[in-house]
Image: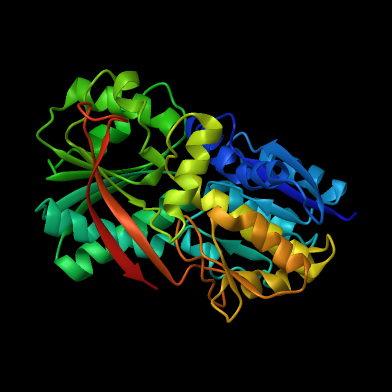
Length: 383
């Protein structure tokens, strides 16, 4: 019996650790589900590695996966890690990388020999959503930006700034970069807040975010709207910061795929908690990779890449969702056509390996609701 090899590469330690563990759980769930179903036409060899939210650690871990022969990777997570791992390891070794949460627009334009996919949307879209929220929902005409100094932070800051100024005549007073996991952020906050913007945009990750918001609330009050992105949507933040953070709003890709409810049930049954940000995207990244591997018939990224769209994009074959993944995999092994309808979206890849249509959530921190984060509205976007 043939063995399908698949790996998950996530930040289990470092700045994104609090989000990376649950995303990993989404990425490993399809193999757990398929093994539990039994009567599979293939066996599974799945492994997990830690990027430590660090590009060099991510490269080292990815090289280990390459040397061990894993052809597909669910991950990495952050764009600051993903872009370097992709350039240094995935592309030279002919590996499929399918990230559930790397959102930098620079992923779209990689010279990647069609090896790189993602189930998360580009921040070129999220920047436009943020600008729309800032103007239409929050009524702000001026903003300063505080962003993590990497590809993710820079690209998203630029995308928001351009959309806010060009589409809504907004004013961006300051755009300030910061380094991860510092002991104090008083100085960059002071620069960003110097001209009293009506809104502060913060783009970063939870471990740094804890200190950023501790310093913010020590020096400024809750009258200023704060808009954060997906990397700072963490239900533990209010307790860690020691503030209800009711003035903090967020935009994040929303899981609204045809199989979202099925996935949520599977995830809760397995882990005894509701899925969080990018968990559904990780499930979809692994599910499509597994289906494509079975259709390809060998653990070779250059062969599997030819089947990624074949098993995901709409066709006349069998519809596969998280609820019937095992049945779908058996059908693929039998030579039948399938198309995957995911938990995060319909998972329809364009020519760059990006999603063709996505939905965003507009959120607010609210310690009176379960999970400390409340969805205010959803926003549909098409690339």
